[in-house]
Image (cartoon, rainbow, N blue to C red; front, side):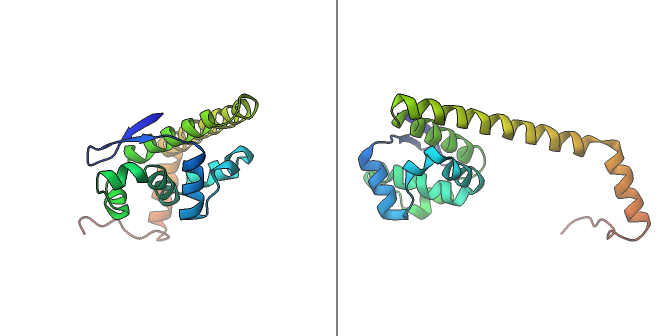
Length: 152
């Protein structure tokens, strides 16, 4: 079992088992077993709302015990809480599968993490490139960009 803490300071336990998979499928029509094909993992990683809905369903028995509604759960999910919930969910999902499928899914998850890290590094390098500042300045001088405003 994995855990994460939401932005309200509540610690949640993520435990994937057959009953949990049935619950998520019943409540959201999301089949966690589709993770083995990889597309579900991409959807969960790229859609934080779907991810939080799935995590809430996974944690629903705990949420019910603590009288935390879906809305209250969602209000406490942003930033690092989403990242930590994603890690807990995906790692627990990998651990659910038998060894052969677990190895494949673990490799896929590692590739995804590597890709995400490289994507962030590439974006950061591009944003730090002085050429970008020069291009923006040229566009601004040519009137192709609106003047920056201060305040709201």
